Length: 490
Image (cartoon, rainbow, N blue to C red; front, top):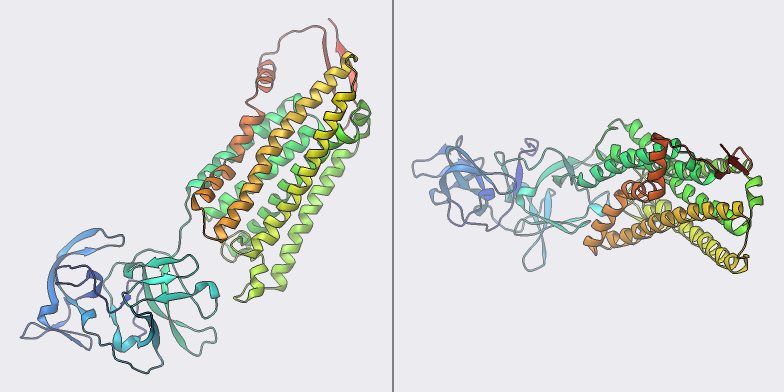
């Protein structure tokens, strides 16, 4: 009989529920008696159980998952759960139940429970809690029918789960495990990230279009935006289940990690480049030494991101994810999702650990740059040549953009680490939700900070509708040209 189970079946327990058509009997404690044999005295036989007439009633509805009612043809139901005895039995097919007193009793599922085949299926996608293999899948079944899922401390009512026999890993025996609905992630943040991708694409297009950003600083910012956009795009693809194939799921996970590490590295490179400009070489001579600088930046970022990605790939291959303690430090890409596992210590080691290092580096560069600007401002003569003032003004504008990026993006990283700690400790849920919103809105924030500025909007307007000017001086410093002063005279 244990083999005749369906997903619509629910193992129900002895419990006293909400009064329905049968006095003091929960709907989910009943079974449909339409096809059961009826005796002359009004009782019914359901499998091997005789249900007396006092425990039967007429129903013209059924309760769906979530508590709503649906009209159905009138039929007879029986309160089967009031008839199973609670005697101490010793069988192999036992299920531990925590009684109201707090003590645990072992009950035989075939002698003390009944199969209900007509109850509604709560959801289409299920997964089982296998406490034998995975410590995070521990669960507790209470006498009133409530199931406690340990990993998120969720209490599931009878309509939220069902028990079903499952073959052990060895294939030599069966064990009864609870099946519950897959927790579907909210799509709200995925749509916010998708909007961020659109805004980042507009930001990148603007940076490539305007000569104003054709500097090393602008090029580094462009690649930073591009890496962040790819990270978001792959994460959204993972959330929407675009890559259902196992191989493509792994590719998405490792590529996403590579793009994420490249994002952090590019912001660190921007910090270093600004420090070189204001701290190491505060004068115009700096511009003459940048011939291969951008090439070196690319080699450092992409190779470093590749090394970090190779590390998690090797760890995944050498230490496959399992239920032991070692697996807490395994990246487990593609195990629970098409992304790196961030629920345990692996998230701290492979995601938030590098972020902490990058934050420390960026804060150091930021401090050194601020200090040098402050010192130079004191020592700099009040009277200087015009082109030096213009060069300084342009550099300070770039520094202002860097400050925005550092504060906003660095702040997002710090908030992300704090939210990770709060999530692991199951505290400050409102804070983690707010952090998710800020983190997913980075593309929109970047667009507002970099493009929606008076200077940039004016440059865009002049680019679309060029105006004739005279006596314009400007200084350009690109990755392939030396800094030089040009003057256009009508």
